[in-house]
Image 1 (spheres, rainbow, N blue to C red):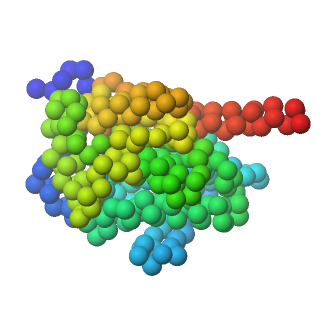
Image 2: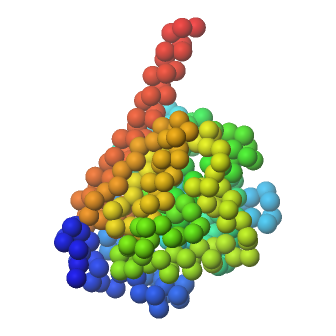
Length: 327
């Protein structure tokens, strides 16, 4: 029996092929097709026109595979902040197209440049390759970003689902490898802790568009032979030091098995004095963020994220004006 507190659109979705079937999810090729089909059915972008460029990044380290990025921006004269976005798909699925609607909407409405990262998927490539590719993107921004209208001093990283995991881990990796603090962080229904055994996993780990079995198997596929599950790069909730984490927005869903770890991470950051905007959206499940074509809550969340990004930039510009006035 469907919970009557669910949003009516979500309740209907639970009766479709998109409510995860473990036999499909165990077949990575089938899941990739199902995930892409799902995104095509539920997401849509109808905003101001944005200029889109596809580029190939060729890492200097030959152990890191070449990969593509997609750059979204409006035709504006000044340097702008940038959001580096990692799509969802449980580390094994998704591509530039599955987050296209989200990225184009954010670029159109926030006046940020948005870079979508087509990171390498498991099992073909495992941890830490997607994180190393994220470092390559940030290096590219610092070296060439100004030619694409990007202010390299204002880098936000973000993503949903597995992309949120990669973005959160990348914050810590960049601090360790590049000694830099980023401008902001945007995490949507992120996976943040390797155990996947919180109360929300026990309550919503079956029948709510994302099963515990699937995410656990996907995680194992992503980790490959690595035994680094305790690392802050893959389990950011375990990070001891978070002073380098920038102002953060975290969204989760009331019927998402990942809900608790998102809330725990928000509290962890707050205890250490990090500015955090946390919101658990009622009546919805994992993947709600991508459903803007059929779900009003998705549009509300996307607008809140856009306002968060705009607010980061406005606050930074205001503080810069104050400093200049006192020179």
